[in-house]
Amino acid sequence: MFKKIFNTHFELGVAVSSTMIVVLAIAMDLIFFLQACPMCILTRYVFMLVAVSGLIAFLINKKIPGHILILISSILGLLVTSRQIYIQSMSLEDIDMLSGCSMPFHTQVEYFGLIEAISRTLAGGPSCAEDGWRFVLNFAEWGFVFFFIYLISTLFKMRSV
Image (spheres, rainbow, N blue to C red):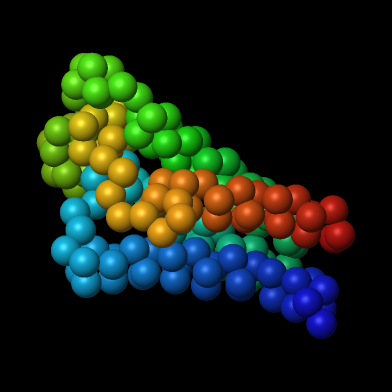
């Protein structure tokens, strides 16, 4: 049964699950009064990129281009979350030297443009180094796990096509 669902509805499952991750993150911000750092916001955008890629893969008849989009967006997510995990593991002296997360992501986009905002966000800062809420893993670590699952499952899906 799992194999049948995997073979017939994989792309839609990727789109729905990654959208639900973003909805859950926003709901947790509202319920627990959390402030998402710019890198967390960037991670949400990458999850939405995974969702759009999954939707494209679901809608087109040739699955391989859609699967490649899911792979690329999953790799981008792995890079963003691994950068945040790295920043969270830095010493306090090293964190104080970072200055990339000085303002909200959307404000950075307005002032500097999208590419510069992404660059500044990935440079990191003290707000991105906060561990924040934790359920076994923190948000960045959970993001890494989900992007890794999307990557590996897409590779398996491409192999079976």
